[in-house]
Image (cartoon, rainbow, N blue to C red; front, side, top):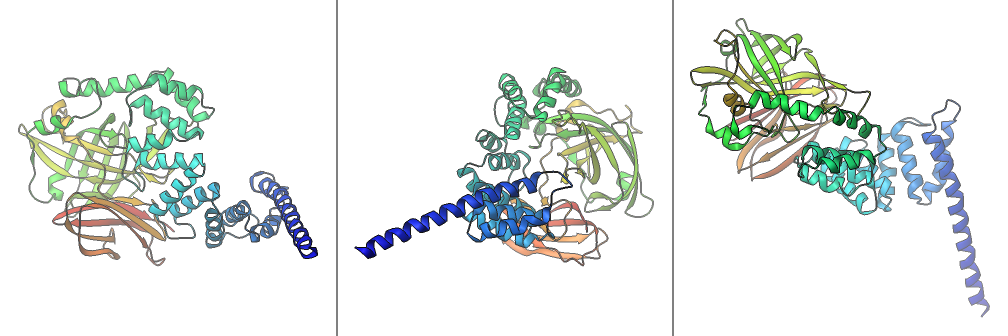
Length: 491
């Protein structure tokens, strides 16, 4: 009997000690949060690590997560991404949703771990199941732009609808307003924006009140208005593309093929690459001399640019700074009403239709402020010397401007210690992938020639720190079809 009473006493004592430890950690976490998030020069951040370590050693997931953030950001200590990863991973395994969301971010950026989109998405999905609203928004954002996954507005909407996070509400409003993944529903969009407290939604409302959408669609329609299949819509129907008999130039594009001045249009699409969002005037003047080194003069939306590039693989890889600024059509940030776009690649195809010659292809840009590629763009140009000074028949513009998103997707942009490449095969094929510097002096084989089945493929490779900073081309050969994409490496 005495033994039984003693055991009960020990149990109550253990429970009491546990409750005391929990109370102590609750107070500790309050202090830690104040240190982490308070912007004041008088906060002693060096107290953060020793403050949190006792609770973290007891397995307190929130303390582990805070320690991970401290090491990740170098708060009160030197940055240590590997240690940050270990603490956040441990907290995530304890079913702490915030840590699971943060772990997804670490995998997305390759911080303290190998960059891995699949693991990032898996952890975000787990975080959502444990109540993380921000993880649901992040999943929607990835599908919205096609980062790490195939671009899919319907999947984006699916995740946005499962989140009360303000930015998820904001993007859900955008999808309803423009008909991305759901039928156009401006009333629903306005309802979401008016109820959303973020400055992003308030800024977007000013664009809606100014009828920017109607004005922009009218401008696009004006260019395309004579073709019944595309009248009153910015969507290019497949039957329009196939209804025009276009003869492609047979043979590799040479310097002589492009020398001279070309005038026409730059066509910008939404993230799906199927809806035109605007059409801008574009002039390109190529002076090639006797080599594949190209001098480029451009006028993009009234902005004069000058630079150089190299003609390789049927494309011009721009190797100097050619940056132009475009207004954001529907800004959600009052401090960012425009974005700088740096020309990366001009994909080139020479085509003929009705005895006219056209220079067409994709235009790949980089947005440094967001560290990402720009939206899909294409160009349709005619020699300025031809009659009409470069005017383009709307039917041929609609057909030639049809554009799919880049076959190769790369992340991060620019890259440093890791590079992820993604692509999708529609049919089985032999595939070879390499990374090579623009001048051809450095080469990394990402995938030796391999027979692959149809499907989605993702590879993440470590990058030797000795690889020089500069411009590189990812070259992917699927059967006899060559795909390329330009990317920069930084320090």
